[in-house]
Length: 229
Image (tube, rainbow, N blue to C red; front, top):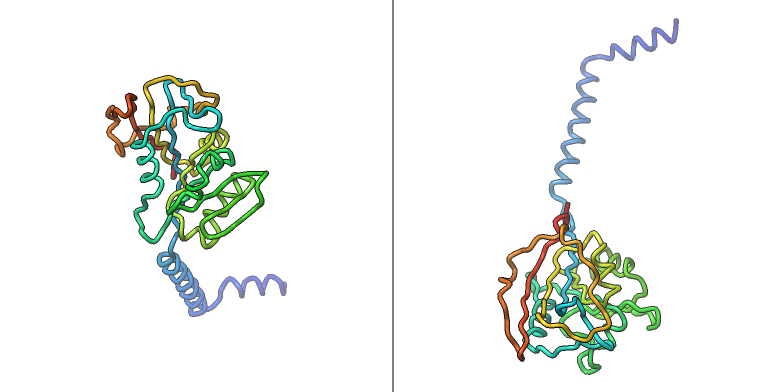
């Protein structure tokens, strides 16, 4: 009977105690919501991709571009440098062969954080230059560790083929900016297959034909439909 009496006493606690418990819980919940409302939620750092392809989807021959289009290269430069926040920088993420294809005098690419993926080069992590051997590790370091997480606005995937393929499959993949040259070249590397059902064209570029050095090309940008969802 003792247990029964104890249980009954618990069930008939004085009203003032019950009110006090309710008020305490309400205050705690309110404080929690107020704290959450003032927290700064970190924004996702997107990964964009930029590439130029010929009529057969080729992108390179003997580790170099088969075409010479200065204006198209300026498009690459400005696109990968420009930020909305002047206090931040963009990343150019590339494989070792892509890095080696850049003339020495232009390495690293200025005004950007250069990240090279390589198993042959020694590991290095500095403010504006990183050498890492794993794609996922590079994305993790850039998006979750300082000083990069607060300095980086956009990660620009600039190739080559394997790095492009990894980027297309990554959840942070957002925009694909593609120059299509209306001529076929002798190439030995092709851009990976894209499931265009997963992308929709945006209005960053008008897609009009551009003529340069006897070649005609268009520039279009596509956003992955599931980005941020």
